[in-house]
Image 1 (cartoon, rainbow, N blue to C red):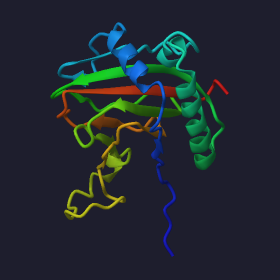
Image 2: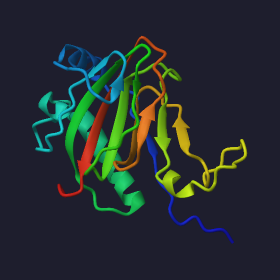
Image 3: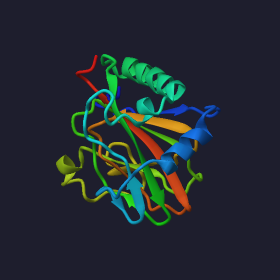
Amino acid sequence: MKYEPFPILIKEYNLTGYPQKQQLINKVRSSPSSSHPSIQGKGSSNHNTNLNQTSGNFILQNSFNSLLNAFNNSIKDYSQEVGIKQGKISNTWFNIQESNSKLHEHHHPGAAISGAYYPLLEYNTCNLVFHSPLSIYRSNWHQKTNDYSPYSGEDFTISIKPDHLYIFPGWLNHSTERNKAKQRIVISFNVDPWFI
């Protein structure tokens, strides 16, 4: 018998075929943005920490309703699988990473669920890295083998795909590898547990 009591779910959704993808990319490129402390190197963001339902909601403000619906359907599926009530998206934003930039390790305080959708990405040029929340408690497990194990692993890297959405707990620390492509665009969102 084997027990695995505290798994963490990161789930991938294929949004290939989203009809307004090029309009979305064009809107991101033409929208005001500025440097962001989480982006190391050349890049920008329109991130807004205001959790008001419309202010700081790039997707809602620009009427990308079918994308918002796809996000909400994915959130519903994810929430049901992890066993929590479905909250509402509280804010959405974009990040643009230019060549050789990376995203520092961080998490999204106050968010029950977070998501990242990649409308512009060259496959295997800037993967998403998740960091174990148990690292601090496993300091005496320093003599590990070279083989990856979900029980002792510190980092878990996902080879993210273009046009895919990744949903994960907002409290889970994550970062990116250094971007090897010319440009990479991600649309991110947070789900506030109080907006039910």
